[in-house]
Amino acid sequence: MGLSFELPYFPRKGLVEDVLQILTSGLKQGVTLFAPRRQGKTSFVRHELIPAAHELGWKTLYIDLWRRRGEPELALVEGLEAFLEARRSGWKRRLRFRQLRAKASAGAAEVESTLEPVSFTPDAVLENRLDFALSALAEKDVTLLVLDEVQALAGAKREDFVAALRTVIQKLQGRLLVFYTGSSREGLNHMFRQQRAPLFASAMPVQLPDLGDDFIEDRMVFLAERTRARIDEASLRNAFERLGRTPEFLNEVILHLLIAGNGNIDAAMAKWMQSHTETGAGALLEELRPLELALMNMLAQPGHPSVYSTESVAWLSRWPDIDASLTTAKIQAALKRLTRMELVAPTGRQGDYEIEDRAVLLHLRAGT
Ligand SMILES: Nc1ncnc2c1ncn2[C@@H]1O[C@H](COP(=O)(O)OP(=O)(O)OP(=O)(O)O)[C@@H](O)[C@H]1O
Ligand SMILES: [Mg+2]
Image (tube, rainbow, N blue to C red):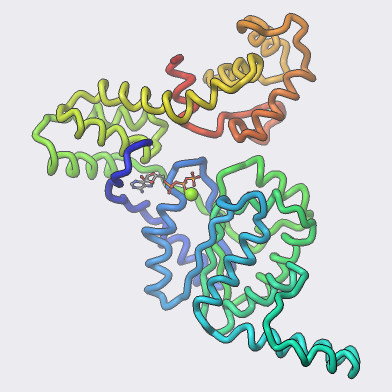
């Protein structure tokens, strides 16, 4: 955070091969990749998947649904349309023609009135626009559509939208491939619950492989090329472990090392923690109410009790400024708010929640 320089990308061993294997097998039309925030999903797509798809002669289109998560349906449809527009494929002309034909079959009088306006008017029904744009996208070439942060669609206000998306994708089997990424389990659970038939029925899940010792070795080489300071590889590996194996955080610690110009990993870690306290994690936590903060602290403990248990109520009651009359209803309300803020997510096990953002988790564990 606050450091704009990007360290080199390190490939996720075997992942791109696995994804292409699934997509070229013809057995599955899509692949899902779900991993927590900041773990490197988007980086994988940009650095590995899209270039590999181009090598296979596929067209690609990347749409980030998170950026406009308030209106993810529009983000998707307009993203598709903007891409087609830029490609100048003449897709609007064909659309107009189709609209005319549809109206012609409705009656001659209708045709009279629709022949006049030659300019393009988008279909008022969003699902129709989606259908048309996706069909145009995959008309000629095999196309890989990447939907980043697809859980944003769980917030879609139109009930039918996700169902329509699923139908169009199925219709375009053989020409359209889809790669879904997501980070919020809560959002996903939601999508599965709300839309009975899952969008991902036609997709196969893959895991983001953890970065291991070879990643650390690679960073050591990077450091050796830039600093004379002696850096202990085991300490760097240990730091990566403490950072929840989040590459972004290790990259930041490495930059702190380079700035300090020495091999003091502990000092670099302290600097890292401080910068996160000032900007992201700390600021977020300051806005919480006492019970919410207490819950966050409890969830940060390894092996914490189940949130509604007597043990949990007792733990939370000991926290400063907590009302003596703590009830499970109050805990539930606080969790609801934390979930909405995307600070926590249900794990899927009854009464179990986890902290979404690893920087927040590490910050709480450090007790600062
Ligand atoms: N394989 C990698 N090698 C080196 N650095 C990486 C790698 N993957 C991720 N990073 C670093 O982590 C940062 C965050 O990664 P990225 O944005 O891809 O994560 P994400 O999972 O898409 O996160 P979000 O859920 O917030 O969208 C990158 O900017 C990069 O600095
Ligand atoms: Mg991302």
